[in-house]
Image 1: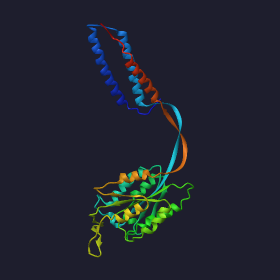
Image 2: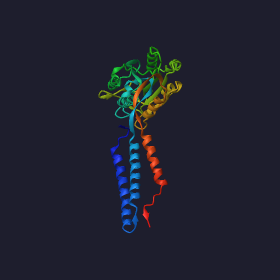
Image 3: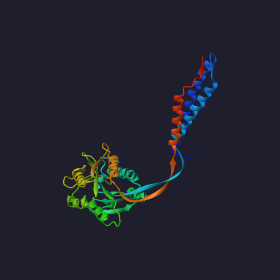
Image 4: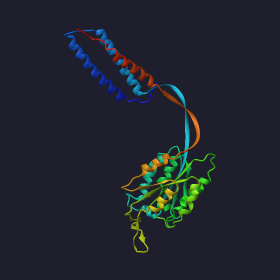
Length: 321
């Protein structure tokens, strides 16, 4: 027999609680017995009856599984590309310890929520590069996330259309006979120097690809560290201030049927992003039969309820006046 909920401590506490209450009940009858005649046989019957259905309740609570049964498991697939902005502005510290370091931490937790789906990683600034193709191997993906840094891409500005176009191209080249649900998680501070993302939106919609954008940073912004100094704005010759710009990120998300989320020290919408991705209906990729234990708690519960009803319906006289 296999127990679905083998909580020994809970069962023990309930048994002790029952024992203490019933001991008080018997002690009362012992006191009464000193003055009145008590029918001990009926008292013993009550004790056996109540102890029996209490034990059955405890067994049902523990979820006894007897034998096995075959269950059909449906396998659904989602394909998700994580597109991470690695421009210099992602080193800004308006989010501690920095935007990029915070993203690395959050992405590792996000990836764990989609163990049954394929995920890939795209990095970008003014250009986009495939860092990890779609894979079920979370260990490989985690290693790539650990290695994210702004030195991996040329830093000559940011082009949000670049990662969207690369993800679209990779999705189109998929040779799977049964296409999966397709999504892109676009992670950036929203600073876009090219402004040419509008032209790619019709292609994304034609392929049913939804973009969920994650804005990283704050409206107040901060300076951008570089080595022992800071990035300097060439126009003002002062330290450059990088601020979260949400307009482009919101536009891409809403136009593709996705949603926009934010991440900062004050606003943490990663759980909402995970929930939105989970709500995407995956494509059925197959079914398989698995052997599972059969929980038989209902039978023990049914017998326990029957004995409890019998206890209530048969008010046995235990005291003879």
